[in-house]
Image 1 (tube, helix red, strand yellow):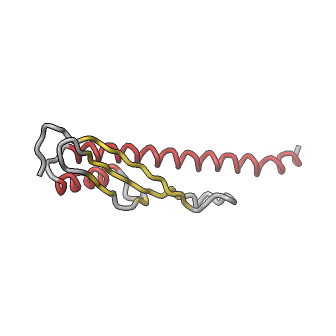
Image 2: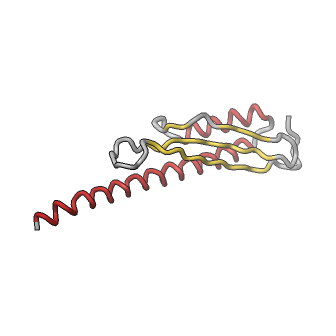
Image 3: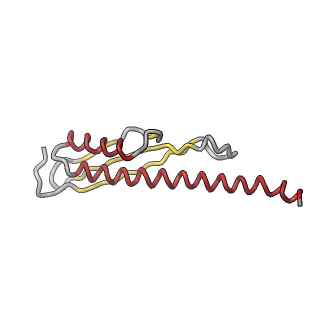
Length: 124
């Protein structure tokens, strides 16, 4: 019985750590996709590119916790009727504390969202 436990315990621990790593990835991916979507929607409601950029960055700052490792959000858009606004986010998921061999210390996760601008509204 002791031999089986000694042989199986590391495998069980490794599987549990992989589940934790996968959970972190899914959580960060969901957070940044929702944040990109919300920021793009908020930016699309603004009247100018400068206001849209500021509104999108405010949403990103409010939505993502300060401990997340994210690059500054990119707010891109064609500010004309029938244009669109796009928000691109890139964050890193930290795996360094898990100590699994073969697992990178961190992994980059990207999310973007595009929202069409109102064709009947005038933009500055």
